[in-house]
Length: 553
Image (tube, rainbow, N blue to C red):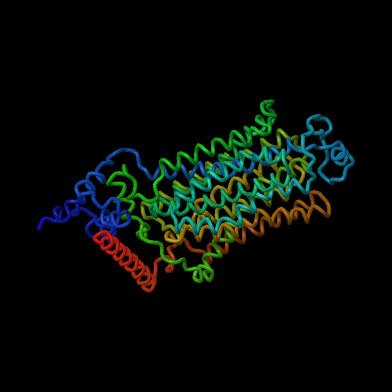
């Protein structure tokens, strides 16, 4: 019997490698399942389905388009956050009282170099809003709070109603809210807080949705590489926003600072429109995907993610030790990011006396190295996995341990050099640069542990982990409320070292990037889903018969 002619209508050369692979059954039912999921396509012939799957012998791989959109989603994430932080500096009316307070020596810092005039503190220009520091902190934290509370609902909605729909909705909501912030600020500071909260809610929706999309489109061997590229968008967004927002805020057009909301928010709306037009929920729904790419994706995924979503096994997730080990590792990643983005500029300005321009430049340098390490780490992981040298679990743990060791040792260097401004910055840049290795390490693990429930798992772990963005500033504030001195900052650095190093050790001991047993639905879940489908079909059939009877009468 000629095996290549067994199923000719699907356009697959069975005699090669697909025949003995379980994924072949998934591909064989590609057309049937698409028809059952989309009744309107029931009249499509098998020859047309063959023509569709064969239409894609192109160089372009459509899963790379998914990677590109994910990259710009994360670009937008930190772009909006940093733009808000930079704009508030220009918006607020800073009085001479605050300037005089700094000159009176209320900060116990490193000695000033009076031979360099640029190091002497200078008053900043006054803005148009009389917001006290407490109100400013509410505005800054509202977006993080919205991001925190919306991730779990966003992940559940993405799994239930499709990742693309929730992703596009999140982008549009966050972009519109960001664009409306200037008008909200002119009306009321409380309306500004509401807009920032709404912006965070939108971003909380599209982050777990992107994780669901990645689980459907990326193979297990490539998932770390593609996700690393996606997460690199966050760091490139930070780098570019730091470099451009200062110039936008200093512009005379529209008053300067509103430009960071209009320009970045407008680009976000364009991104949402493009995602709506060009993204597809699953590979088999893409009208132009090539046969080779489609078969490759199906052969190298753990399960058929196009089937109806089974109930999320929350009890097993909440009692899983690897889940909490992974969450704590991501928590430490957020701790170090919070130190870099929110707290370290204060240390550079108040303790080491760097002027604002130099401060911003020094704080942006690690982002370039983070991007480099993300791409390098992701490529090395992909190469090791593809060639079978090391499994996915080992490369995730290896990257996480390198991140923990590199950051901890470098922060220890910051602790020991004290007021040596050159070496302090060298060690700080190295410490923050190692954050890039956390991306191909612990950060992408939710998609490895459970591709089926990647959205819910990512939302759960990221919600707990991102609480660091709230907790850490409070801890730093508690230390500095006693005295803002180098001694207190050294205690903060030691706390960072303890959290980061312990998270790496615990993840290597108790974490796992292997697919968990609860990723696959149980027999009871399969039976329950099958019963619901049969009930739905019977109901539809009875409804059709009823309509036919009424028409006959």
